[in-house]
Amino acid sequence: MYDLLCVYNICGINGRNNLDYYIKAIDIILRQKKINHRVVLSSCLNDKNHILKIKNHFKEKIDYIVINELVTINVSFNKAVLECVKHYGKFKDYVYIDSGAMLQTEYELCLAYDFHKNNNYGITYCGVDTDTGYNCLKEFWHEYPYRIDNLPRNPYELRPGDCVHPHVQIISNDILDFYEKLWPDIFATFGTESTFAFLCSAIRKKSVVFGDVVVHHISGLDGGSSGFMKEHDNLLEKQNDGKQLWNHTYKTNKSIKDIIFDQDGINYGFGHEEFQSLLHHKADQYDNCGLCVNNNLKYWLKDNIFLKKKN
Image 1 (cartoon, rainbow, N blue to C red):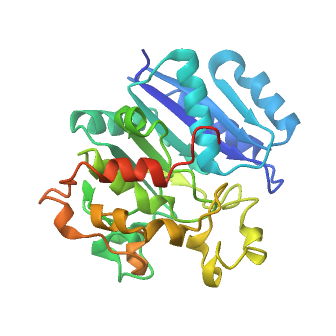
Image 2 (image 1 turned 45 degrees about the horizontal axis):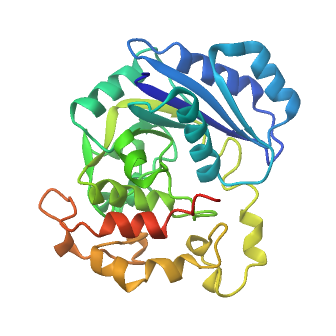
């Protein structure tokens, strides 16, 4: 069994040419020391010639999951993981790496993974130098604009309602074992980040920002929510009440608003986009460590923020 599946996620919907950057980023993922890992390229609608050049460069050193239809990053990432699990079996844990993230040394992943597994976290976020989302942490909600010199103290354990941007994110196999996918996939654009702390807490695990590793990151290298942002101009009122970006779903007739204000979810302790005061969770559903005290939230999450398997 491999310890880690590292999924490097790229997107060609906007037609940008980032081929050289992709190759450099994959190369340093492959060169990570002291970990037993497999690397897979997850591609959505990238130029066929670019994919061919990547394959010619790395050959069988990595795997390739190439999607030639318009899907969200949530869907393409989940598919890459599930296809690799079919081929290799379960991994101990998984790493989401976005296209703009570039590891800087050959030991960063080992350092972060040792911290992750030794402390039994559900999700460990590596630090990045741009587009951190740290201003979405309760401690920093009023610190606009956030600054690199105002990083969370390390490590910074997330509480229910906290969220950060998952540019390099180590995810426990316990998430996959229960939810059957790693990322909630009802989201067409924004909002996924807001769910991760709840996913962990519901199965009695914590999530953490590990700032001892700070990865270089180019924000929006492939374009954010490519292929779906333009849909905001044509959405039905039910689907996008007031054209609020958080209220945009994928492959479901329900709006995010319909889902998050479900009374059962509220009673079980779900919250969403709390830094925008959209829906605050019920604090009495969590213990002093921020772990969920009921056995219902995890089932509600599985049934409501993940698409059914056929999708």
